[in-house]
Image (tube, rainbow, N blue to C red; front, side, top):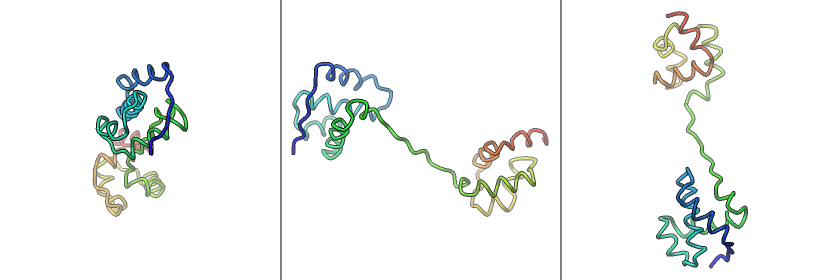
Length: 140
C-alpha cells in the first residue's frame, strides 16, 4: 500500500537541509526518507537507501502525516537506570544515619552489598545524588 503525501517546495527544502544538518542521526534518517519520498521513489527503494525496513519507512510517513516535520524531529531517549534507584530511600536513610567516611566504606557496608551493587562509581553517584559527598569530603 502506497501512502500518499504532498510536499511543497518549502517542505522539500527543509527536508533537504535537515537530512544533513540535524544533530540527531535518527532525525536525519527520517528526513532522508521523506526527501526521497518527495521525489517519487518507491517504498522498497527508499528503505534500501535509508537502511531501514519498509515498515519503518511507513512509520516515518505516518509520523509526518500526523505532525509534519516537527513530529519527525521528536526523539525520546530512555536512559538506563541504576540498580540503586530501587533502594534510594532505604540507602538515603541508612547513610544519613551512618555517614560513611569513604566510598570504599560505603561499598563494604552490608546494606549496599545486599543490593548486589559493588561498583564504586555507582555508589559514588548515589552518594552524590543524596548530597552526601560533602560529608565524605569533611571526613577525609
